[in-house]
Every structure is written in C-alpha cells, then in structure tokens.
Image 1 (cartoon, rainbow, N blue to C red):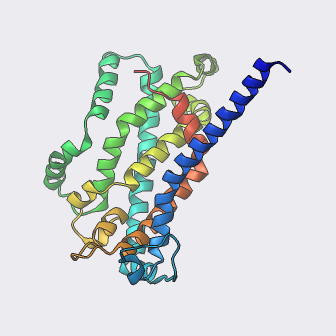
Image 2: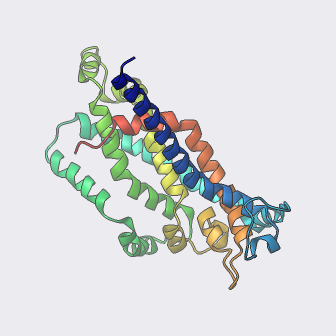
Length: 283
C-alpha cells in the first residue's frame, strides 16, 4: 500500500470522525431543550427554584400535569384542534383549485395575479392584525373560533397555492391532454388524476396549514376574548399570573402542547419532505 493511499484513508477516517462529532453536537443542542422541558415539568417546586438545578430530577411528581389538566387543557386542546384541522381542510380545498388554475389554465392577468399572491406572502401578517380585527368587528365575527379560522386560512393560502402550483407543473401535461381527449372535464381531471398524483404536496400544504394554525397566538388573543375559546398557546401564556413564573406548570403544558404536533409531523414527515422539495417556488 502506497503512502498516498494510507494518507487518503486516514483523511477519510478523520472526516468521518469530525462529521459524527458535529452531528452529535448539533443533536445535543437540539434535543437538550426538549429534555430540560420534560425534566423540569416533573420536578417538585423546590427543585425548580434552586440555585443549582439538577439535570436528573431527585424526586418525580406529576402535580404540574394534574394542575394543567384541571386548569382547562382539554378544552384548549379541543379549540386548537378545531382551528387547526378546519384551517387545514379549507386551505387544502381552496389551494387545490387555485393552484390548478395558476399551473394549468391560461387567463388574462395570470402573471400579475401570481406575483400579487407572492407579494402578499412576503408581507408580515402581524401588520394586518388591526385591520383584520376591524373587519371582523364590523361583521360581528369576533369572539368566536370562526374568525381565527378565517384569519389562518387567509394568511396560509399564498404559500400553499404557489407551492402546490409548482408541484402541479412537474406533472406531465400529456396526462391531462389524454384525459381531455377521452372526454374528461377539468373537474374530473382534477379529482381523478391530479389529486392522486399530487398527494405528497397536498399533505405538505395541509401540514403547513395545521402547524401554522396550531402555533398561532397573536390572532387568538386579539380576536377571541372568552377564556372558553382560548387555544393552547394562549393557555400557556395565561399561566403567568404572578411575579413568580410557574415554570413547572408552563413546561408541563408545553409538553402536552408539543405532543400532538410532533406526532402529526412524525406520521406525515416523508410526504412533507417530498411535497416541499418538489414544490419549491418557481415564481
């Protein structure tokens, strides 16, 4: 074996070791906050508020979880699920028709419309909270979940329409042309041919809409006044009622808040990656 070959093998081994060290470091700093959240949520009060907190709890208690569940977690979970699932469903249906029109149908002003959608997506949605509240107030739609659903659907549509339209453009148009020759209408083509072929992208935009709505705080606070309609992010913030931050209770609720979203993501992860990768924006 030559000297150059030995040096090459040593360099390859060194590169692999360095890569694993970096991966372990990144994984540690990524996972540790979740570990600390879980550990702190099962610590008793005196172990949380100490000058030298331990990485491993000395005593385990579930009193924080008992408090959170009795505090209204189940009702807030219900509200979050209603908002997120309804937003995802509405967004998916509207995006499917809108994206198909953008990707396949030629009409006057198409380029202007597409760029207008993109410009809308680029605008921070927090700037629109006051105008949106004024509109909902004039329509008497405040203090109900529908106003939040309407807001979340409005602000997720630009991204989902363009992402799905980009994905649809990757589907060979010859498939649709053959269906048109065979007598299929546009609606039949959309649901019988395009829908199955675009399943990864549809799952991706549905998941994006779900997560966006699941994490929403600002519009819920502004549009909803009743505590019975609070979602989980607002419920976590509402635990701050005194000068002492209730870390145990807040982190226990954060753990319960994170579980549905993480489970949803883990189940649909492969579709999300496929849909977003192939549906990268081209406009």
